Amino acid sequence: MSGPDILQQNTGRLQTAMGQCFPGTHTIFRGHDLHQELLDMDWVGLYVFSITGRKLSDAQVRMLHAIWVCTSYPDTRLWNNRVASLAASNRSSANLGIVAGLALSEATTYGGQAGLRSITFITQAMQKVEQGASIEDVVLAEKAARRIYGYGRPINSIDERNPFIMQVARENGLDQGKHVLLAHEIEKVLVPRFPKLKMNYAALHAALIADMGLTPRDYQMVRVPTFLAGMPPCVADAAAKPEGTLFPTPCSGIAYEGVAGRVWPPSR
Image (cartoon, rainbow, N blue to C red; front, top):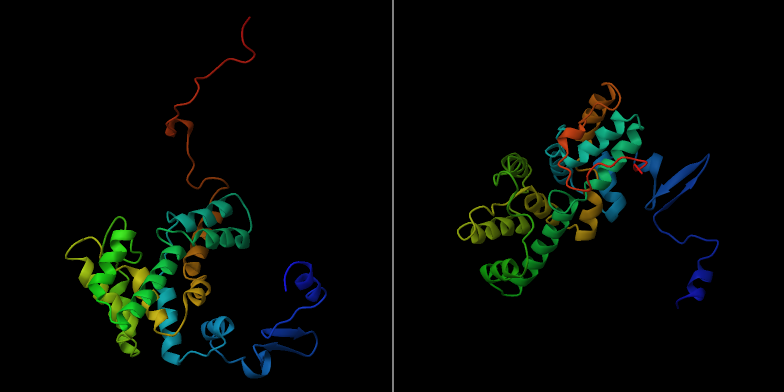
């Protein structure tokens, strides 16, 4: 069924198993009464449950908390924080500024796209290795074809977050997952040949999340708030300063190579 027929079938109705709000009485959330059954649930656990329909263990929830805390950088110079802060500097609402920053957080080099491509590669590499392929062959074939996301980092190849996240993983018994171990094996293949391609945060947290049984699609939704907590400090700081004074750029600071200045109206 396609075209007008499928549209007609769905006209005036919503078919879903996700839930429903019954104003004045209750709300169903993936088959559970939200207020009666889920009120004491950890918010991160609820968030992942909303995506997957599966409840994580306490250790996995603690791991996700740490993953998000470790990316909460209150540095206004960062691309996504900068956008949120510029909105605040120009007196837009905090909500609009932060949402704009979150939208930009899906960047390819530093943000969500890097993590998405990393978890996709790691899960596909795992499938090939489990089918008998050599991890060295898998990695080198991928490297020859395209960039391997999750390895290498602009500015400094050492990722300061990784040791802390691995410590949390060890404390919660999550450091020996098959995707985490594979992520380290990938690094062992890359670094002797490409010394700057050390494992970065994208690969490590993608591997940890893959070991929780989440798919790349799940990951894309789970990672939405990853940079969120670093934005409000930047927004508050920009809003407390005089309007429009964040990162002002004088005309003298622009290297202009276009048409020269002209007089208008032109002299006759």
